[in-house]
Image (cartoon, rainbow, N blue to C red; front, side, top):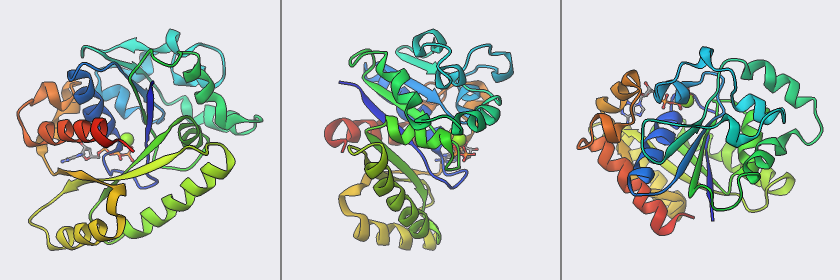
Length: 254
Ligand SMILES: Nc1ncnc2c1ncn2[C@@H]1O[C@H](COP(=O)(O)OP(=O)(O)OP(=O)(O)O)[C@@H](O)[C@H]1O
Ligand SMILES: [Mg+2]
């Protein structure tokens, strides 16, 4: 059965896109079939895989409006087993159109359901850093939400807000939604990072992934070549840590 995962946080720049791409590439490297869905008008995931958003004629927006099937919009990437439904900036306007429609939160879920239950092993949805119609679609379609957080002073506040959002989504559109928290860009030499991590390990318990993604400049470089870290720098710490995350997800995903 397909596992559908939304990677979301209202906070910008916490490695949502990096996590989608690197986790997706790690899972496909292990032989799983993975679909990446770019739900962010910034289209960073689309760019990271080497596509040019403004040249695209069909995007995830066409699926959300019900104009195209998901399969007709998806394309294979240069990574074996890794497909993508791309995005571009038109999603900004589309989000406003979508909001006015009844049951707008279910559009992505409907699109994904048309694929059937075993076409992909994993679907990873990259959300924008906001809580509009696009993110609500992702949280309605997903069975698991991964919330990336940096170990900083605001982490607890961000997580509290997201916990409330999960409760809301469970009541309104998606009773099966579970969530897990992933520490990203961890700097082991930084005291605040160490203290915040210890607090999260105590307070979040099993919700927190054991795998921690540390700062690695190779992760910052890889999108410029349109390659995931598993291809760009396969032996670096960043690649190994995202592989460990994939293994942890496979062993005890939820
Ligand atoms: N572990 C890491 N080590 C170093 N740099 C990283 C790491 N993870 C992500 N980055 C870099 O940090 C920046 C933000 O990451 P990313 O774009 O994945 O965040 P995001 O949450 O998707 O941002 P946005 O909210 O704008 O969508 C990027 O330049 C990315 O390359
Ligand atoms: Mg992003």
